[in-house]
Length: 456
View 1 (cartoon, rainbow, N blue to C red):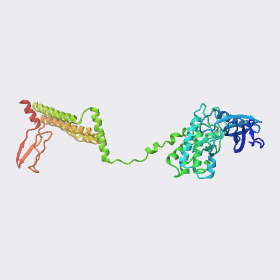
View 2 (view 1 turned 180 degrees about the vertical axis):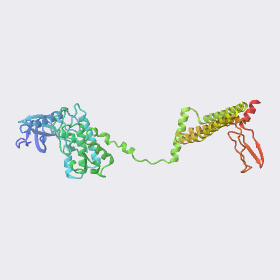
View 3 (view 1 turned 135 degrees about the vertical axis):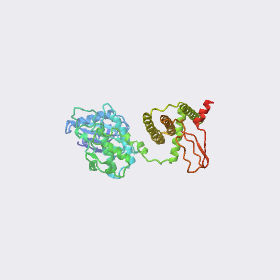
View 4 (view 1 turned 90 degrees about the vertical axis):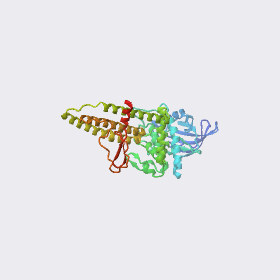
C-alpha cells in the first residue's frame, strides 16, 4: 500500500492531523494522528482502495472496520469512525499507548515468566470475549507486533486486518496470517477459535526463547516446548504452552484460563508424612466416633451389652451340652457305626481347619483394614468351631458306644512336664488342677455346673 501523499496532512476537513507513521503492513498503513475536535490522540489506518492488488484486500478492510465498530473491550482499540476520502478508506481508532512486543523482543532481554503469565491471562480474557460473540470473531493474526504492552503491565491486542467474523463451512476462506504463528488448520483456510489459542501460545513461546516459532525444536508437526524452554520455565507453563500448541485442533485446549490454574500443581507437591503412631491414633478415634454415632450408644453401655451377650451365649451352650448328654443314643450296628464315626471324624477335622484356622486368620487380617469388629468376629468363629467340634466328638463317641457329655475331655491332660502346673480350663472340658505329684482334683466343669443347677 502506498503511503499518504506528503501534502495530505489533515483529513475530514482538518479534524484529524497526521503526525507520523506507526507501521505498515500488507493491509494498510497506520498513522499517529490527533483528533482536534475531541483533543485526543488517535490511530488512523489507511487503505488505498484504488491501489488494491485484489478485491479481497478491499473486503478485508471493510470487514475490519465493521467488526471493530461492534467490539467494546478494554484490551481492544476503541472504534471511532471510518470514512472514504479521495479514493482512500480510513479507519479511525483509539490510540493505545505502549510498546509493541515485537520492539521489546528485538531489544532483548526476554520477557520473564510472570510477564508471560500476565499475557496469557489477558489473552484469555480477550479471546473469550471475541470467541463468545455470535458469530465468533477470530483474529487470525496474533503475533508480537500486534500486541501492545501498556505502562501498567497489561496487554492490548490490535490490528484486526485479518479478522474473520463468519464461519464458512462450505469453504472458500482466504489463508491469512503470519508464518510460524499460524495453526496447521489455518493453512487449509479452516481457522477457528483454536487457531487464535495456537497463535497466542506461539507468541508466548517466542517471547520466552527469543526465537521465531519455526526455528524452535519440533517433534513432527508439534513444537517441542519442553526442549525449547529447558529449565527456564515452570512445569505449569510448559504444560500450558504444550496444550496450546497441539497441532490437532480437536485435542488442543479451547480455553487458556484452566491451564493457568496452579491448584493441581500445588496438590501434587509431596506433603510431609504424618508419624505412623499419630495416623493410627487418628483413624482409630475416627472409627470409634463413627461406630458410636451409628449405634447411638456410649462406650460403657456397649461394653456392658457385649458382656451380657457373652454370658447368655455361655449359658445356652451349657444348657445344650447338658441336654445332649442326657439324650444318649444307642450305638448303631458295628459295620455302620464305624463308617459313621469315620465320617464324623473327617467332618470334625474339616470344621477344625475351617473354623479354627482359615476363617479366623482371614478375619484377623481383614480387621487390619476394617477395624476391631472383625477381630471379635474371629473370636466368635473360634468359639463356634469349638462347639461344633464338641458336638461332632460327642456324636462320634455315641456312635462308637462310648457316650460322653459335651465338654468332657476325650483324654486325660498331660501333666508330666511339671506336676505343679495348673492346666487352664478348656472350652470342651473341666479344669484339671494338680496340687502335688500323683494327686489330681477334677474341678466341676461349666456344663456340669449348669446341669446341677438345672436339676436342683
